[in-house]
Image (cartoon, rainbow, N blue to C red; front, side, top):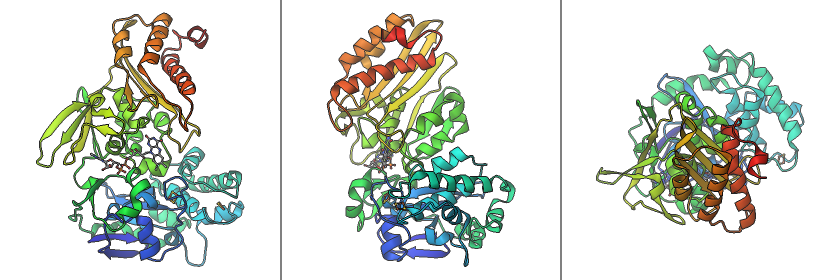
Length: 467
Ligand SMILES: Cc1cc2nc3c(=O)[nH]c(=O)nc-3n(C[C@H](O)[C@H](O)[C@H](O)COP(=O)(O)OP(=O)(O)OC[C@H]3O[C@@H](n4cnc5c(N)ncnc54)[C@H](O)[C@@H]3O)c2cc1C
Ligand code: FES
Ligand code: FES
């Protein structure tokens, strides 16, 4: 049985665990405020909040696209739809701010926007205007225009500046951001037993890949819920970092220790989809999606990561991520296996890392070309590099020959130009909706140079590289 709190109501249901949360909310519960727009994670009309109790006993809410969320992932959570943020006879602050700023016309997108803004108010940390715009990065409006919605976001952000973070829920209730039943949610969530496990059918982690194509087929199916057995912790030892395959993109972006070694992780991973998708999209799912432009695949290929793959009898084998991708959407993974975690060497002070991505839109779009570079130096001599490029081959491409060429060379303009020539021979982009072959080759070149221009601005100038 799946058990959770939907707004103010406890739900216990025998519905299939593979049913999308959107379907359950609208069709089984009759809550029609949550809208079905694209059903592909792109429009945000179906956005809901998912609250869970953390070890510190605090409630932590994230936004999700309910069209791509399996019902199983709601188990033990507080799911909040637009009906669940209404105050008695009054608009809440997010709704009122949209109203004050004329931020709605046909209204189809509006539930998604007010849910995202309410989610912003539930954050544990102080929020900025930029945070509020990021919170709306998964919401699209077709008729109002974004300026008035941005003004509403600004109004909400300004009101949140006075928030008492030591007594967050009570402050939010008192100041009309959320209804008062929220204060009982922690105790009510504690009553739900977490012993339920979902171990039948297809394995689903965040659902952001599988549910785009298979939501209808999964409606009457049971699923295996990845979070029941795939680890979701980020651990550091002296020399290694070990990341559970269930870790999602937001977890990575917000991990303080990870940011110590990858100071630009937030700006790099902000280029991955939108906030609700990042809250759901797991690293394991990104690898197994096996898209040639998978951002996580490119990021972790450049870290020369190892995968730990577990079989149904518990045996674990280790392979390098660069050997995992065999051909287009084919990988070294058997039906009875799953990725348990990945591991890589923590960069030392002589190691430099950069990630670049160009897509048609800056946010909520997959790459035309993406690339990551990891380079280790000894004085000015290259000890080793690991460079990966996406969108230029049938698989996320690890540049074996380019890396081999660079090893032991002096880091100079002529070395980088020669390496770029080798990269062009290693890649084989095709013309498709994301650009022609010529365009992708040019992008790959520019992004390859961008790594060195960003990491070593004293050594490289654009005019020397592209002269
Ligand atoms: C609107 C939208 C925007 C997107 N933008 C981007 C983007 O900018 N960049 C990008 O790279 N991707 C993007 N994606 C693709 C997707 O979000 C990612 O690939 C994501 O990481 C998939 O993870 P998931 O947990 O949601 O996978 P799921 O859908 O849960 O699973 C995907 C596949 O992986 C398998 N799987 C999951 N976990 C494991 C495991 N531990 N071991 C073995 N198999 C496993 C599942 O069985 C399934 O076959 C986007 C998707 C959407 C809908
Ligand atoms: S319906 Fe468009 S994101 Fe879910
Ligand atoms: S108000 Fe019509 S889509 Fe936004």
